[in-house]
Image (tube, rainbow, N blue to C red; front, top):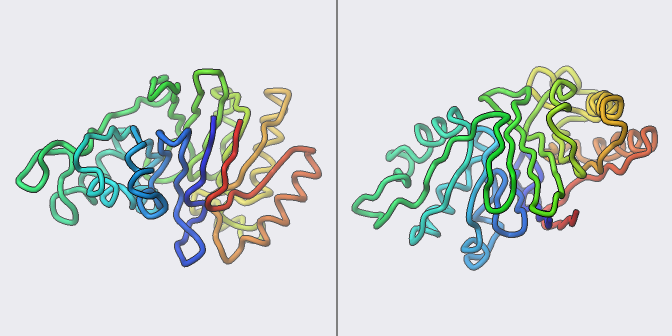
Length: 256
């Protein structure tokens, strides 16, 4: 399984992009920077899109991708709540066309929206995908994605504390986890439904208690202004727990 990070931050700038990553070049997970970080040829390879929730920074790239790939139909998988947010607030026929329908501008249905049922496995492009509810507004879910050769990644999506309650559902080789704030903003993180390194530490300790091991960890959805602080705190936790914890960078590829 090859994971390519297109966007790894929660704010966009000249040097930072909104959350989005690819699996084996064909499966997209979230879409904050989906079109802007790929060539047209690379976009043509994408066969399906997973959306963790309907907040703008995770769905923003959908319309641009749809315009660029209007000659075919791409499947978009998410919970019913997320699909409703996407279709009623972004591709609603007002802000952007209803890409789910054939019309005078579009010769065919460009996007096919397909609902995922939480905790029910779904085969998507030779990967088994399980949507697992997490602690974040807008009905957010994380995704366990298992390749056909058994490699597993769990992406928390945006989440606050409470992952301990879902560890029974996933046993990943790689954990891609929210780390939006540094420890001094722990209360802000809790209120916003996000994690800081110290909160993630508690979740990892519980994971180890339940599973007997710790997966490799990659942090994502960082606030750029706090990135160095988050990195330092994450490395301290890595030393304490004797686990690999890295911060994702735009353009980085990871193989598991």
